[in-house]
Amino acid sequence: MSSPAAGAVSFEIKSAQLPLVALLLRSADPAVLEQDLTGRFGSTPDFFDQDPLLIDMTGLEGATSPLEMQAVLAVLRRFRLKPVAYRGGSPAHQNAAASAGLVRADEASWVRAQNAAPPPPPPAPAAVPNTPPALVVDRPLRSGQQVYARGRDLVVLAMVNPGAEVIADGHIHVYAPLRGKAIAGALGNADARIFAQSLEAELVSIAGVYRTSDVALPDNVRGKPAQVRLHSGPDGDKLLLELIL
Image (cartoon, helix red, strand yellow):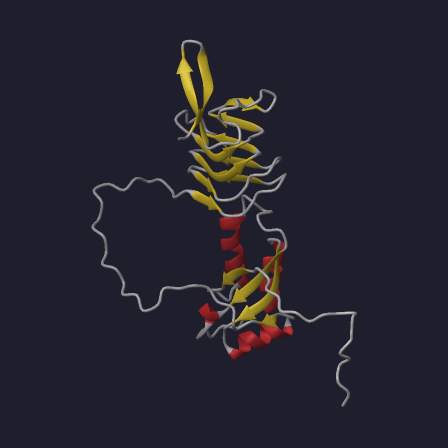
């Protein structure tokens, strides 16, 4: 057997790591998966952008129902995900994934709490406000993308690029540069505010009162941590842009 030529220059073999989105599958029913994905991401149909996906089937171990892998893959692709690998699952589930062209990646994992005793139940509060938790977005928003936090606050952990739009019925928190449009208090909540780690917005609006980039941001807040709030005075409503110290 001949050995590879030591002087080959047409290629190199190197180790590589690919960042993947991981989906822990807990149901073998494609219809249930599609319903839950629609409930979570239906208002942002382009939330994913052909992101490579690892399907984790450890949540299906012990399940007796077959896994219609092609139907599951079709659902995921409709949400602009690109399944490329799998881990866990029963032998039947693994065979279905391998037959669909997915790569086995048992070494892939995420951090989980180990051997943690369940905490005691907290005391019931005197009154529980019927307010849904904030919608959290942890990926950059590109031009043309829109996220709407209906009936709640919106928290964005990555950049809002020019041409992107973030909307909330409550407050908007952007822990990154805000360069697109931000609309808080969309249903008229005048107490809503916009917070940005770096205020560079094309448009800011609270309860219908807005300011566009046609009027340059003041030097003391442009590109700095700042908040936007609505002020009502004898001359009417106006937006106040204030440095966060």
